[in-house]
Every structure is written in structure tokens, then in C-alpha cells.
Length: 357
Image 1 (cartoon, one colour):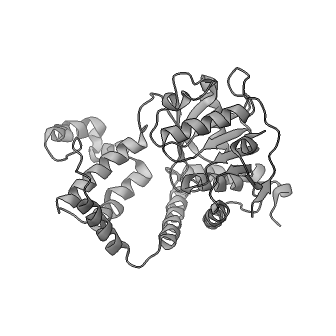
Image 2 (cartoon, helix red, strand yellow):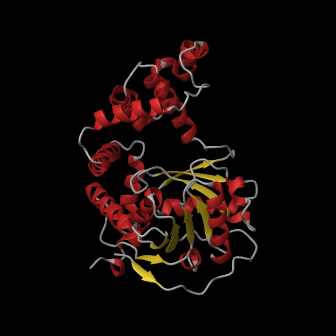
Image 3 (spheres, rainbow, N blue to C red):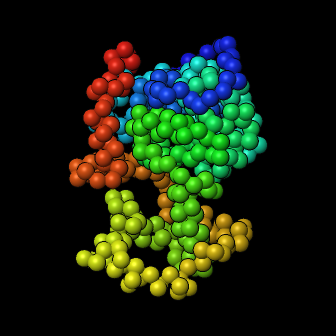
């Protein structure tokens, strides 16, 4: 269980310069304990990082405990150490949570006004050398950094749900972000057992969510027009190209379809098809009550009587199986798991001083 701590002394964030050169993260603050924030906490603790959390919700302690339990089961199934977790403290304010930490991961709701207010609080109290990152899935870092006096130490660190299992994190700098801050963020996330991807061009929704939005928008049209149900669309993905993407991605998958001619042959053969009117990616279906009810009803039928908790457990179990299989063949995200396994015995996660009682 988390320990509540009294408000501590605030540290000034007025000093200038980028974040410190060392990437060691021994203490972190997570501001916002929702789905993403709680999963950040779990990953950090399982990597031996002490975490302080601020979230005004009266149920945050229970949520953190439930997510930590799910994450621990998943890591045990992966064969990763779970006996040396970092300490968890619930703090009573943003200022108290970020005082003295190495990394602050902002994970509040996707409202620009809320994020601006939160980032101001973080900057006013976090140590001058602390890395400040946002989990936003769409806001540009420059847009968020308007609230900061020292935007050079701010980055977006956009993870994927469940954060405690999926290693990818998009690292995005703004116009004022220092190059040293990007490098520091990449090293810090690697310490957490992740695969940072530096998004070099600042763009709305970064890389992953732009791709996901394209698929999501087309899927909405297919349901709206009666072409397919939610279950049929999911079946096409999980029994078809989803399996290819999980181990090889998009471009290498298409490269194999080009045969001995590789990508050049594939593009020559299928490139002209891009001009055919197959999709409606530039259109957005009208978001009516009828469409919402149609999708919700089909989703209810698809999932049957399985609860969200049961679906989450199934998701984690399947992801563990995929990661282990990829590790065995040294491919994709399996390489990240292998690296975590290699470093665990010598890292903080194996520190006996942190062993659970």
C-alpha cells in the first residue's frame, strides 16, 4: 500500500540550463494516477524506482494497487524480477510530489488548460535538474511548454497502454527543448526497460496515433455503412495483418511482399493502387447518437459477459505470450525484454535493499 507523506519543502525551479547529464533515475513523480499514470507507476516501481504520486481522486490508492498487481503478474509471467520494487508514496500536492525527484511524468487528462496549470505547478517545485515529461497523446510539446519558464528541459514521453508491458515510448521535443534533454529522456526511458523512439519533427499526434487514427477512422466508416461489425474488424486485425505488424512492422512486411525485388518491386506493383478510391481517410463520419449506439451495442455483443478486468487480464496474458515468443527468435519487442533480462541482475531491480517483505 502507498504511504501518505506530509508536504515537504519546495525546491526552486528557477535555475537555467538543461537537465543534468546523468540519466540515473532513482526517484520519480507521476502526476495523475489514471490508466496511463498508474501503469507508469507500476513500470517504474518494478524497475526499482521510488515513485511519488499526486492525484486528487479518493480512489487513486486502490487503482494504483490494482494496476500494480496486474503488472506484477505480467512481469512474473515474463520471468522478470518482481521482488525488488521501488517505494510508493501518495503525496498531498503536486509540489510535494515533485520535490527532490529525478523525473516527473505528467499524466493528467487531455485538456490543454489542465496540463498548462499542472506543468506550472511542476516547474515551480521540481529540482532544476529534473526531467519534466508529458504523457500526452496528441498535444505538441511547444504548445504545452507555453506554460513553462524553462521549456528547454521539457519533452513529451508518449507511452502505449499498458505502459508496464509495451516498451515503446515516443520522445518529442519542442522548439525550445535542449538536445541534451532529448538524450537524457532517451537514457532515462531505457533505464525503465523501454524502447524510446525520437520523433524528430514536431507534429500533432506524433507517429503512432496518426497511424492509429487512420485505421480507427476507416473502421468507423465500415461499421457505419454496414460493411462489417466491430467483431469482424477485430478478427481481420488479430488473425491477419496484426500478427505481421507485431513482429515486423509495416514497411518490412511490405518489403517481403516484393519478393526478391524487395521494396522497389512492391512499390512498382502496388503503388498505383494508392490512387484508387478504396478508403475514406479524408472524411470523418458524423458522430451521431445512432452511430455511438450501434458501435456500443456491437462491442457489447462481441465481448459478451466478460468484464473489463477479465479483458485486461486476457490482454496482458496474450501480450506476455507474444513478447516471450519474440524474445525466443530475437525479434521486435522481444529484444527489449531480453535486454531487460540481461540487465536486471545487475540493476536496481535486483537490489536486495529494495526487496519486498
